[in-house]
Image (cartoon, rainbow, N blue to C red):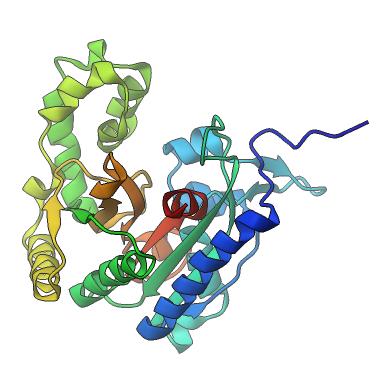
Length: 315
């Protein structure tokens, strides 16, 4: 009997591994220059880390996690992303007390129960960086500059940065009400997911890819229109720093990212030379994440990208 590979999993054969090594070696080289140190964390975590950290209403938590009980009935999950695990490791090591400013790099497999397609598997691999411990907008700019340097060092061209700010939790409450008012007359004509999000978290409506919903989404206001003074000043400072670095960006008013822990700056880096403006990586600031998983209020910012996607692009 010959066993088939589990659906959604993928072998990485020797001729493919050389591409992965190129990506990993380049990331480590850039990390050394930016002073980010590598961390490795477990594949299995307590489910509550992700429900509290990522958000109970997100698609990742409600539809995509591999979750199971252990022998004592505790709910465990295969990690669907890396940032929540970084926050947990930061707290477990007591760094919020002893050495709060940290800059970390990670690689590794993640797991999401999605429909398998080219370059997207149920076990997939991410690389990412996280900078924890300061609200300084220069760290937002540094993380973006790291991402840009990485792609340039790998030989990618035509880079374009999509940028936005979704503000603080108070700003989002105001924005949620504005979105509900905008969609109120049309929500009955939108998809079932959008109708659920309308009640739970209308911000997630902007993530919808259903063609029938796009006309209503395109005319929606953006979160940057509802920023408090402090968040607006932070966003202006980030833009000014990117200007000083000579990094071109486009403000995308509907860029919000797919996880609930994001605050203030959000971004995606794309290459216009790929034919379509496909995202290479994405990230942003998450100033409430560490607090949401049991720690003190501690700001952070980072990005993550898919290794499979990046290898496909390079090949």
